[in-house]
Length: 517
Image (cartoon, one colour):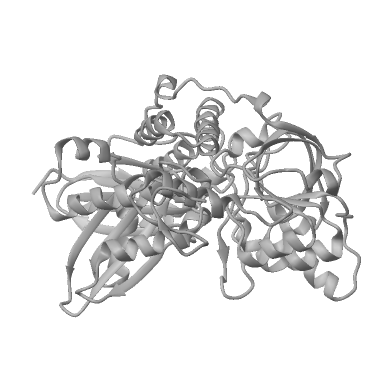
């Protein structure tokens, strides 16, 4: 039996709050180092540009103490509570965690976006402080409290997958079949967490836990595998990257920086397998409380980041006040644009309300004719900011609204994250519109291009209201042109073929590892 340790209520609460603030603006250093190495290796210009934006954004967030991503996540906490721990507390452990979340998300100098909704199958009302967290607790020998705090964005969580395979099925085949269906809304390059065994819920939990581990795939490559799990990690790392999905789904050499796997004994009849990705805004911290006071997390050195600056000169400048449909028709997939002028915003809730109003024959609060809409829910500004971090949200969620909105409003173009689905691409082609992609994981960098911001419609929707942004040299990539060609369809195929480890089935029906014609 160890010496009992007493953990004070406020020390625990403050430690959780401080850790959540810390991970909102500091990437784990192992992620930065792995991404910087991948950036140096990358041969795809579009993917390399996206990585540069992510790395520059990360350094800016570390310097400015503002969120890496506008989606500051749903909080997940893993606790290992020693059996010799005593609590000097009147609140339950769950209530203490949630009070820590509340403090972190209401911090006056770095207010974080509240994204958690109660009554998820009903009214979906924002809890306004990002509580409650998802809390996992175990009781273990010892006299300390071991804490892992993570904030998981909706885009990567949305791509979580589970399958109950037959014992004879191939896990590798399932992962290789599944990853291409995830699109790029999970913001690669990131990590894959895989849980194998146990029961359905155990597999999902292990997949989430695996993502908290240190990135060390290069060390594993150097020393070689020592067990079946390590063999699987190496095989999946090589094969997933060989898919050519690349940064932000634009096509390139690196889709994942590591593959983490945890396993557990399972029933003889089953093979549960769970897969959860971590995005480019990887956010987690690990600390231990021993009764000596709240945790003090050391900031990383700015020397841990590569010295990169964003070169705006290679992009085509666009005057949004003067752009025409004929000019838009000349934009090519993969082309970098720098937007200047006024854009409107609108996410899921705004689109749903617009469509409902159109169906009732009501006039919209804003004229969208010839304008661009940005799929974003920004963080509230602090100090002298015009707007807080304002990166794009996953565009496919707006696909079901696209044809009606384009047809009824005269909207010229859309800006979002990752790919568009077949219905949206067909609508873009039909209406001679365009879809532009901003980089997920570069929210603070993007926000610096926004020179003014005001709410112009649906104010009651909070961060989902319609804003008008005045932007200067906002970097975007042409993702779907007016003819319906999508860089998210062509880019990965081209790079999969260039990598040459997985045959590409071409439009002609041939399986060709050497060309992507």
